[in-house]
Image (cartoon, rainbow, N blue to C red; front, side, top):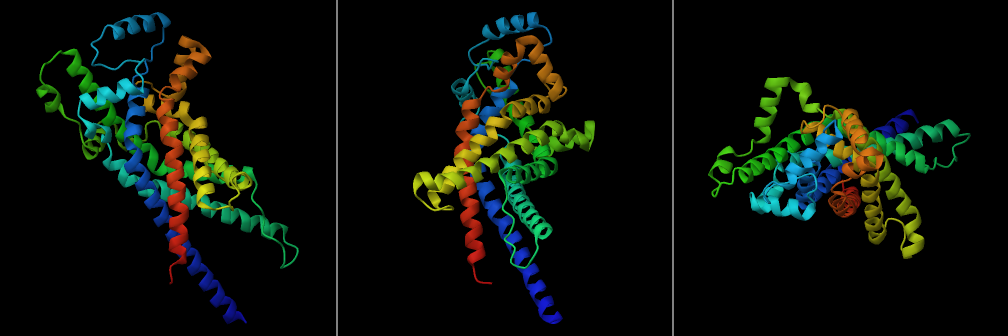
Length: 353
């Protein structure tokens, strides 16, 4: 009997390791797919966020606004919208400029989604086991059913771990590259040069160069600049992401007439998940960009300056600039990501050992 139990334990551990590996692989595929498709929208959103003017005095803001409106049409300002930012980017680098800073995020996406999906999965399984064991009075006790609060907390833990380990330094480097492209283009427009020789000569540093220069000047900790607000953003955002996904999986079947886990319901739940993420995290994402591009010393200071200058509603309006790109990217991206992960994970699990 003891030998049989040991064999069962070994087999179960092997199955868990295989499922974890499949989850990592499916999450990596989902992350790379969405990054390749939606990275241009991330670039445009970051450009919009980084043009937000941060000044202490309201009078200074009025002066800066009058200066901005008198600048050449080829520059960006704090009033630039998605269309003007898109046109500006294309004029100063062509369509390839929409993929500025792609290499590091693309490489990291394999870690992003794999970490989020797998930590969320492991957290839920551990919670079910713990709650079931604590409440068991017999061998026929039904497994614990996760509540919506449980889904939020498990999602939050996955977002927090991912943000601390990978997202903060990767997005710092990406935002530095995007800000560098914008700055070079602004200088070119303001100098009224007829050719782009100076602009091209400056170029944009690669991710390795940015990492080396940052570490040399400020140390490794600098790569985690904005790490606090990134962690809060992804904790709340990923919690909302998985909460909305499970809400869709629970209620959409009664609307669509399809069973839970069907392609239609998975796509619909993914759209809801993406909306949930950006509805809760967009202001924090804007603050993160301002901190990582050096326009604000911290997220709290940046928010307080905007609040004192423009009032609460004005600050929120500034921090939700680029919402069209966030939601235009977020819902389709989440739908594709979750569908790719769900079907990829199932496919891998169904493969013969």
